[in-house]
Length: 205
Length: 205
DNA sequence: GTCTATATAGCGATAGAC
DNA sequence: GTCTATCGCTATATAGAC
Image (cartoon, rainbow over all chains, first blue to last red; front, side):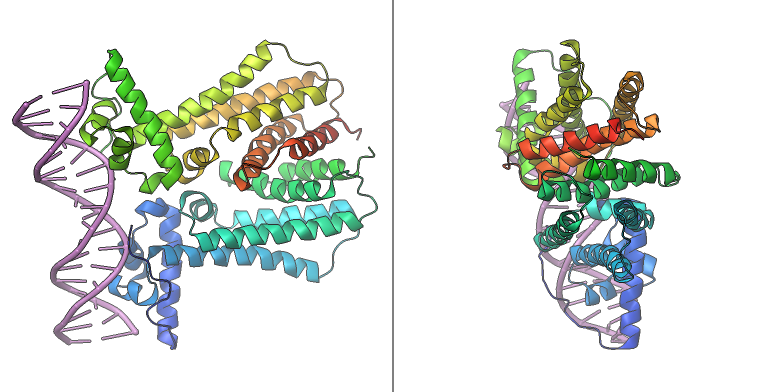
């Protein structure tokens, strides 16, 4: 394993530098998606970006830093997409709410499944990124628990566990469905998943 | 990437050889679980097994072959555990059936979560192993579809999709729950998961 | 700021003695 | 059947010219 530094050796302050950095990140996304983590070498990334390996190491201290930046950007995009929908106003009915979250998850995954697979399955997970994901999930589960607890149509006995199950079932079943065949239409899947969760949450005991 | 051969250069026919091979596999399981796939080097595996690197390559053509053997052994153990339970007789009530499958999944994952994570998430997936997993899942979904279709208490509209969702939800939510904290008791989780699936499958439309 | 050229190192895998 | 020693390769990362 390579030596790790935590900070880029230079913080880019100029326009051209930012563009170079951006091109390197975009190239890294393509290369990781196409070749996987191990075969996505820094030389390939630099070449794909039309830059030299030396320039790459001007902007990123090591290979994992590139991966970390891609992964957290992706996670943040998903989170902010949901926050934006929430800010636009939450539907009143539970099934509409559930469908909204399911669609958000589908959107987030449909984007670039190959890259997603590399980022969240294949690649080594540096501790800081693992912590970031854990916190993000904890936040989602807490939000879900609050929503479920306040909803009079929700009949489930164990609300915290139901919140956990709801959040992780959406995330992981969407993940699996997309991973299996990204080109398959999602509407049947979406309907069944929403039905499952709504029945679970609202069936009288 | 290393050159790949598909057959071990020697099929072990003697007791000592089988023991050596077994020790190497056990060591590989420990090393992969502790260090991950990339850092779980063949040298480390050999060292952990108390053998030399040369002996390792007497029994396995390359590193991926070791991983493949561990993974398929694990998958087969899970499958045969379920088949055994089925052979002992399937409960009549749907909720008992669901609980049986959920418990089987929990047992299969509780075993060695760290190794499981490496095998099924981190490691590169050789095509033959990917095909094996796909077939195993397809079989499980078909079995589930047959069971659901024949059950008069099942009310769900889209049986094939419901079968897919049932199988993958059990598999992936159990996987996630265990991965998060292997030491946490599973009974609350088990109850909620069973409740979710039973309500989904049996609620009148 | 970007390049070329290269060092450093660790990997998988092999050869051949015992 | 097991070992030691080592090859050949490719990776990350660095140095220094421009």
